[in-house]
Length: 150
Image (cartoon, rainbow, N blue to C red; front, side):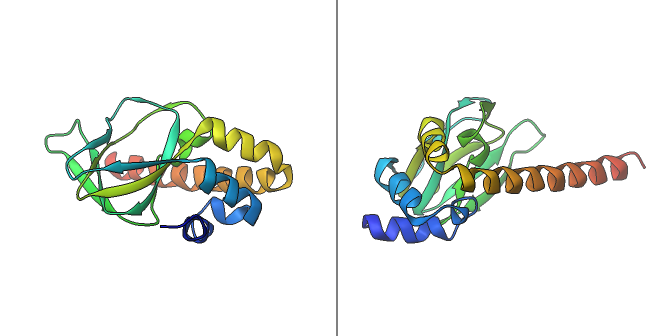
């Protein structure tokens, strides 16, 4: 895949769609391109996270452990895995394993900090989008909590 193709793919994905082309070019050029053979673990649930993975090709299983059975969801090209880790230190809430040979861009928190520092106007839009997402997730969790009480 070319740098131009990476930029186009990033531009279709939140929160990158809020950034100008020059910022996307910086991300696509500076992110670490990683190849994971089928079965390889990208990261484990509970690991300290310092960045996200943008899936360029292949498929990744996101696995939640700790219940009687593990739950998993498969994501493919265009998925952003671990988005919040680009903005804040967190523990990984899931494990990620390549389901098939996979290529991903690893976008570190340091890279996003640099990009956001260079594009302050867009940073405000990204913060607003993250705040809205947090409100939505909080409301969904509250609804689940209320249903569980009955």
